[in-house]
Image (cartoon, rainbow, N blue to C red; front, side, top):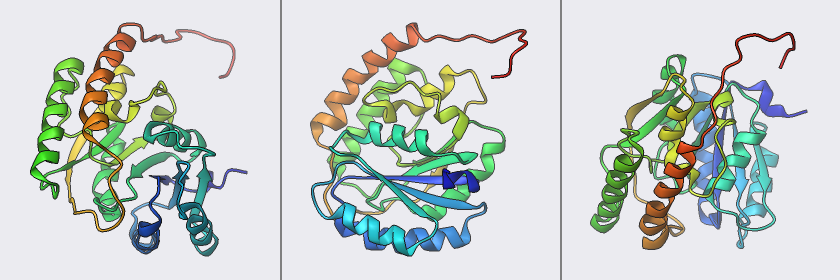
Length: 245
């Protein structure tokens, strides 16, 4: 039995070599679960970490009854980790945050109320606590993505989002998927998405996994891949049927 079906929200936390953050993650997420506006569990996705992250996760999940984990045999990347989380989550809603704790899990409570009207609600980091160069990379990549996808999204890199699980499970899987969630939501012709301001903090432990290559060059290439996929995306609606899906 998939225990996440007992909850209204599953918070996915992908991580790769974040051993130094797991203790603080446990503390902050435990506090959030006590304050969440809906019944919530946490699903860690260990993306083939080479440090002691998996062992720390096992200890953490053994202590916390609302914490669960899955672990890859090798590093597959953020998009794969999120896809696995969506596939394994059976709650009505699913959200995610990064393991670096640069966003606050308490801010999920700012996003969740809007899911009654939208398919996705995404945070926007209004006061970025990053270096000027990192902020420049983000602004440039976001501007180019908006031009290529016409999704209108302000900050797709914000690692704090919530979705209707049924919508998240329908996203097409490809590397770089996490950069295009607003555009993918719009492809489904559903209720669209909402942006909400959230807090942002400096990283206190570990190191960023993003470089100028995977933050800018790869994201620009992914925009062309998205446009190709969009032109071939299959949409249909069934007018009549005598069989249940």
